[in-house]
Image 1 (tube, rainbow, N blue to C red):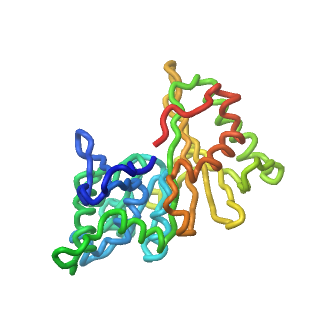
Image 2 (cartoon, rainbow, N blue to C red):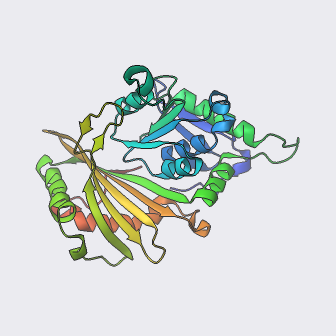
Image 3 (tube, one colour):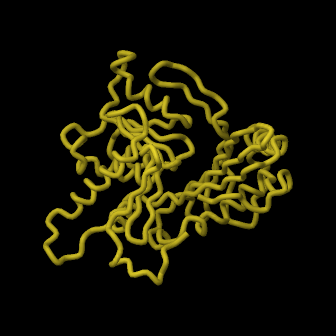
Length: 313
């Protein structure tokens, strides 16, 4: 999606924020500008000095769920902060938060974490906290506007995010949901990925029309660094290389709800772009070729009969 060009952004509030009914999820927006949950998490990490909770201590660890974009990883590497990629589920973050007090291990607190499904949190509570995320963004905006004189234009959400992209690159990201898919067909799609791409020969995979090279595919598994427990079959990851830049891209497939009412196939699309002249493209447009190539490889329409996703987020 994109902003409504007929609306005068200068008349809009600087910050728009929303929480769900119990306040654990959050959505952050500026004037005519939406912030993805993955970008939000990366920006909170990069601007932790602006947040009173972390200003004196810094961060000892950050984590994201595997389907979330790697925007957080890039910041954590630059800031020399330990970063973990976990399966979906807050319990995995909880173990990292409790590493020292419950397992006599390394202390990763102060700690921030989040998921692409609009959940963001810290070690002050062992659950996502949407209200906390909104307060964090208010602190970031307050810090960005220190020294701005009365009558001068204030620094808004869009300016903060676009400066972040210019520094670290943009991770274009969106999710396709195919809901109510026949369970047998949904499982067949996952089997095609495992047989042809995960266990197959990557060099034999033919590229489509777009300049997108298939690199490899893996099935995500996780060994908990705190208690050593292992979690397998957490999603299928297709890795690509974009020509001529050589920038990385990936597509993640996960399956849920394989009951009598049908299944949901979730396809997560991510594409890194360091060229600032392309950062203003809307994510669904930027990711269209990647989506088409992934859908071709996994034979989505042929197997499920679905020509388009039910929802694009």
